[in-house]
Image 1 (cartoon, rainbow, N blue to C red):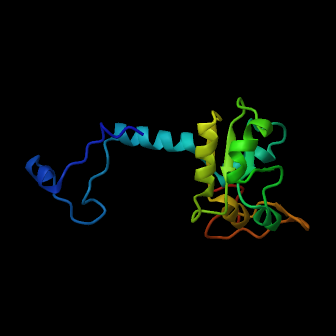
Image 2 (image 1 turned 135 degrees about the vertical axis):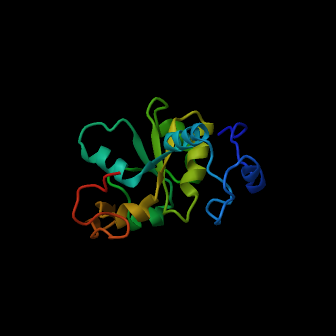
Length: 175
């Protein structure tokens, strides 16, 4: 994202401009302008998809308009993966992506979870090869924690939703 137009003012500049000085660490650096915020958050949505949205698109039946790629190792894939996902470990993307994927179909990458940047590295590798790509936020961890079915080498499994990551009594979180 181009941040050349992001305006951040200092507390002294705010006071000089007649604005109250920041009183806490949240506002010590004031929010970006609405235009800069719209550009940043719009870009974020162009680069990321969340687990619930991916699950809903896959559950609708038919072609969701994208392909999901699990970028982890074979041992990790065997431990659990999204049904219908393709297994393409990040290290194999340069040599196998063009044979397995269609550049006209967006790719959604995922890895273990928020503490892992494997899906980011995979998305970068795919983008460098000319594929339209988004990263699925939360990865496999949040897929399982939100209660969506997954497959292992032993068959299909599903965990109860974790109340810290998904609503227990509603179809979606409403966001």
